[in-house]
Amino acid sequence: MASSKIVDISKGAIAPADSPASNIAESPLVSLPDSKMISKNLSRQNLKLAEQLQFNTKQNLLLAAAPASALDLLQGALKLVYVAIGETIYSPGITINHVYFPVTCVVSLHYVTESGASAETASVGKEGLVGVNVVMGVDSTPSSATVLIAGYAYKLECQLLKRLFNQDLAFQQLILRYIQVLFTQIAQTAVCNRHHTIEQQLSRWLLLTVDRLSSNELSITQELVSGMLGVRRESITQAASLLQREGLISYRRGHIAVLDHKGLQKHACECYIVVQNELKRLLPPSA
Image 1 (cartoon, rainbow, N blue to C red):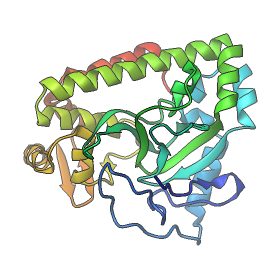
Image 2: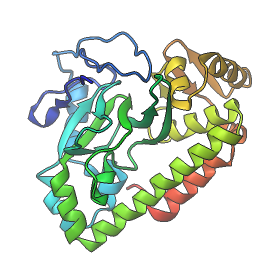
Image 3: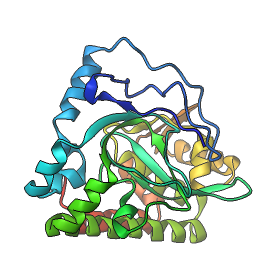
Image 4: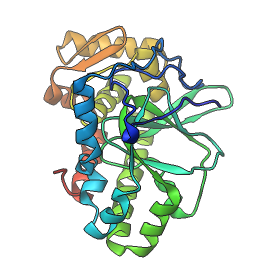
């Protein structure tokens, strides 16, 4: 599977956070929105944002909580990169050489069946780490990781992560706690997809996604959401229409906004709270 180039801004190449890359990966997950060329004319606002991120690893929860001894080693090795919607972080059976600490992006972990159907098992945002399975002694998985919300992430070579995990006990304990949070999300996703309504699933998914962003609006299509939940697009349309009529969300082509977070929680199942409580219990709050 071909993947688009990830933009490394540590050397000054900065992509606008709202612009997809021009060479988007072909993914069997969903059809992606029309792509646009990354602007070569960098605005001062984008430059300022990139500089702030480049020197502020605290915007990722794991990096913010990392012990000083580990962070000192990581600082020189971390590269701030821009990842575009549809970007393939890793593919089934392919060796994972780098891990990613999301800052403003969200990455979907999903499985694509032989028939081409797909469903998300979990997602990772600023609270976590994409590719964490490498610390468990494996260098590939049968599933995929694809960028769902474009943005920035810190990229790190797997070998350094594994070395720190094996040598620094405090860092190891932090990563293990995150793995438990990720396992909880995977378990609740399985329960939710089997036992809860489409409306509840959509509410849970929207809440978990916007909680990782600085905005309440997602640049995403209903087709993409249906691919995440593994349901028909028409089912998402019906559920979204119901939530919009009640004033909880608004949506137009390619955009969904959460208008009433607390109200949407009432429509979500307990799975959302279970995941959030486990995150709060096991990982320190962000700075």
